[in-house]
Image 1 (tube, rainbow, N blue to C red):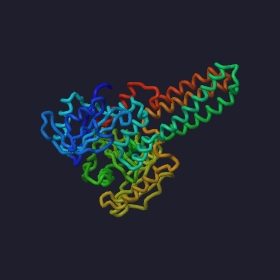
Image 2: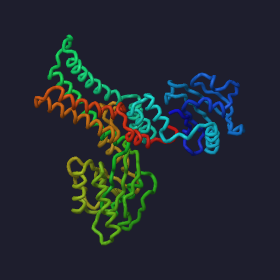
Image 3: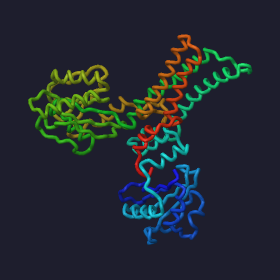
Image 4: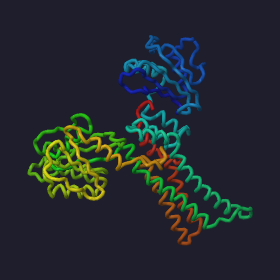
Length: 455
């Protein structure tokens, strides 16, 4: 990291304020080549984190903007290196011209996530915190914001470090007894090993159990809207989104493919999937859409079974409701309440909530929102930031837990402590991968692919 990088940190749309960010050994000197403080005192002589007013120039010395600049010297900066920022007016053309002026000073374009990667490599944050930065940028609900902010503050790292320290203390005690037999050190007892293994395995069990909640906060819950043709699925889809995303006609079989959108409903992030009407058809294209609908039903974690309340229920709808309820959380939506009901509405299977609404008029949509919130409540016992939010974290935590399970089985089988603690060492390796103590280039590269340029 001997070179200096720069990037536009505020995207490429016109905004009130546009930010240029620099990091590296030449960050401050490059800034002084393109920015002249109104006071005449160069930025190299300015204190850290002081906003300084001045003039921004292009490579030929022509004035581009009157703006603000600040510097933060390493190691007390985001990246651990000397850093600088320019806060300009947010014209994309202006920002690009300023960036080109910095390039003329020997600065290079930053790669996606490179500022945060440098912070990680400098030891300013562990991998869980770097992932939280990306999660915070992409957060779509209040819950996701609180989770990412807590993780960025170290909540998840603290849980992992506590487990890590318990296991390292166990290993240290074992090696102390082994290496210094003549010293006055408490003997290494199987009971002590078993207690620590049981306690840390339970903690890892609790941690891995948070993954589904964390994943739902960050990625959203797949929610399939299913039903027979003309039950009003696409109308409900559009009503929930607030605009006409899916085509709606009186003709049965209009929807031929799945349509997916993300939606924050009742504080729950949904990946809402409109599907083709489920029926047998001689139309090959429609039948392909029906197969995709069945696949969407299989992979959904919430299903809205839409039934036309103005028509009598039939056996196909009964079977569809049964399949959905077996698959996971399900809400039976009696649609078209604005029309006369064909018959008294029957009771759904146990555990299936019922909502009566009109997707056309919007009446009852609020009740559907409340029903979804009841199915996916916020767990007040879960500390914000202490959830696993991606598959990498969940896999590493599960592998560490499995190592401790094997260690306990080995202990129960009467194996010697050194054999048992081999599995403990493996558990420490997986915990190290979780926080970045054990660095793998392929893992870190995959993590930073999620970042935008300038962060």
